[in-house]
Image 1 (tube, helix red, strand yellow):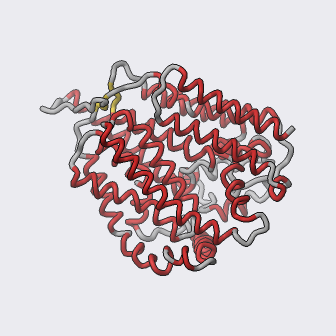
Image 2 (cartoon, one colour):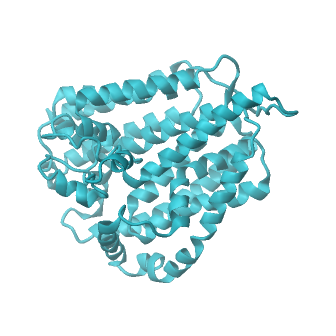
Image 3 (cartoon, rainbow, N blue to C red):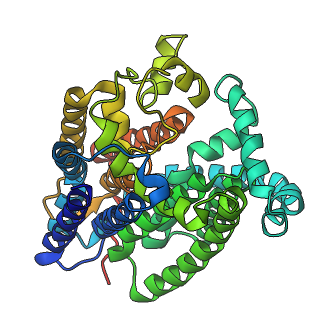
Length: 430
């Protein structure tokens, strides 16, 4: 019965992929997201049939799969709207905020270089020469996590991490709008640092989430890029992806090669567990975390007893059937935090707001609308296999996106009241 349900879930996403491209054959962010859901659903079947991991799952049920699919489709509503209402140009708000933000990102990225260089020999290279290097780095990171969120240190690193996803958006935005290459090129190199920093800490998820962000952002902007630029970006992207996945493979070998099931078993468990654990516990976790994960930063401003990191949170909610050590998709994060009913309300209200804000009446889309769409696609792409990636201190990334969006909206309104000589430019699709 478990195989029938998991295979049926896979088939539903395959049919959704076909429906998505039936009328408009354009490949975009939705293509990457729904395609990834098909991959994770397929891998979940593999891990479900792995004797070593099969005992870790409870019998599957029909309704949790239905609930998960409906919630994911609600989250995909803005992406679906954008797909069925294609635009060929970007209407740019006349402002210097993009250049200013890019310069801040570049400066903060440069300030990370000494740490990267110092770790090349003791951290990065050891991943390929020392079989225990990845495991040791992960243990060191776990120890450091006990103080995470309670102290402020390394301000440039905090600023850079809070702008990490936004740096990818700005890079593609600069390429699409043909901004100065003096800023675009160093900004592109700055985004690569987001792949390197997690490696030194033995974190695979950080590298993979950065890769997902890059993929979904490229797919969002590809229709606004020329054929030549698209070709160059694909080549560079594949190169970066391979370079990023090599240390991930080394970390995986270091941490799991000696386990009974081997590396392959743990890879399939890692990538395919989210829908299975959601099915088991997403709707019945034995309680709720009351927003302590998904709205952690907001709650910490109001209630001082809010857990500052995942170690404190797991200790506080030890009574729950599952915690964030396991993946339950970003839908699971919200259902475990607020319960299945309130989670539906949050999803409907949030995505209805996004849909309202990204609606277009002509052949162009505003830059701030693209930014909102990028945010929703990051959430759905990253969270399909993982969790809600803007939880805890990563909520700063969500905050910076909201701040930039708010600035752009009000700047556009002011520019209409007090028009300058240049009212914006458009980038036509090639």
